[in-house]
Image (cartoon, rainbow, N blue to C red; front, side, top):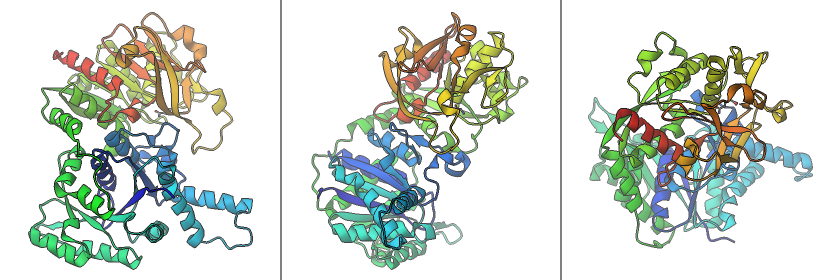
Length: 538
Ligand code: GLN
C-alpha cells in the first residue's frame, strides 16, 4: 500500500468560490516545502468530458499532453505547480458511469445487481486513488466539483466518506470551502450558511477538518471562534480567504493564514524543507510593479465570458511579468468587427491575438482583423482558428484565391485551404475525436518561432479537426508568407509567419496550455516583446 496522503476539497453555500484556486494554492505551499503534490478534479456532470460543452456553459476546455479534454481548473493546477496533468486528473460522472456500464456488459459483475453503492462509489474511489498508487506523489489533492447538498454530488461525497474510513483520518482530510456573505444593510458578516453547509456535510458522515471561508471583509476573532465552535473544528482550522486583486496572491494569503501548517499537522507530516517561495515572490513583484503597459486586442466570439479564454489571459500575465509589462487586454467581439470600424478599433493596440474557436459565427470579423494587423504591421498571434483565419486572409487577399475558406465554415467551398484531415472524414462521434494532445513540430532555422523557442524541435498541444490543406501550399506560400513549423511525421503545417512584418505568427496548436508561472511560454514572451517594440519601449 502506498504512503500517499489525501486531501479532499469540497464546496458549500454556492458554486464559483474558487475551489480550484484554493487547491492549487495549497498544493503550491506544499510543493514549496518539497512535497510531491498533484491535484485532481471530480466533476458531477454526465458529459464524459467537458470537450462537448460550450465555453459559455463551462469556460475554456483545457487540454493535457495526453490529449484529455478537461476542466479549466487543471489549467490552474499546471500554471501554479508547473507539473503536467493527464486524463487521470479529471473524472466526470459520465466517465464513471461509462466505465461501470462497460464493465457490466463485459460481465465483470456477473450475477449481481449493479448499484450506485457499491459499484459507482467503488469506481470513484479507484479513480481517487489511481494517482496516489503510482507512488509518484506524497499528497494527492482531490477537488469535488459542485456544492455539498447537490443531488448529483452525493456519490462523490459518499466516496470521500469511505476513503476516510478506509485510510484513517491521519491519511485523508477534508477542507470545506464556504462563503461568509456580508449583509450590507446589517453591516454584518453572516456565518449561518456555513453552519448549514457543514451540517449538510455531516449528514453524509463527513466532518470537515478545515473550513476555508471566502469573504469580502476580514473575519474578526469573535467570528472565527464562533465558526470554529459551530463547525466543530479547532480555531486554527478556520482559514480566511479574503478577496484579492489577483489569483496569484492566494498562495501567500493561505500561507499567512497557516493553511499549510494545519494541513500538515492533521496529516501528521513534517515539512521536508523550509518553505521556499522566492521564485513565486519574484514573479509577483514583477507582475505588480510593471514598468510599461501595452494594449493587446483579443478577438474572439466568446469574449463576454472571461473564463472562455482563461489560459490565453494567464499566459499574457506570465509573459507580461517577465517583460515587466502590464498587459491591458482589450476584448473585441469578432461579430462586431467590420471594414468600417476595424481601423479605429485596432488603432490603440500594440498587439493582436485572434483566438481559437469553432463554427462560422464571427469568422469574417476575424479575417478583417488579421488583414489589418498584417498590413499595419501590428504584432499578431493567431491561435488555432486564428492561424486558420490568417491563412484564409492571405489566400484571399494576396494569393488570388478569392473563394478561399475553411471546409468547416463552407463544406462546398471551391478553395478549401483549411480542410478536414483525411483521418477525420470518417469520424462521426464529436466527443474526444479531434486531433488532441501533444504533437512534435520542427521549426525552420531563423524563423520567428525558432528565435522565440531557442530550439528547432518543440512539442505543443492540439485541439482541432481541420488543418492547412497542403494541396494549396504552392499557391499560398511565397517569400513573405512562409511555413515555419511542420509536423515531422505527417508534414502538417503547424506554424505560419508573415515576413514583411515585425512579428506575425499563426500556430495551429495551443501554446496557452503550456504557459506556467515558472515557465512562461516562449511565443507569448516574444509576442509581448514585439508589442513593447511597437510601443517604442524596447
Ligand atoms: N475549428 C477549428 C478546427 O477544428 C479550430 C479549432 C480551435 O481553434 N481550437 O480545426
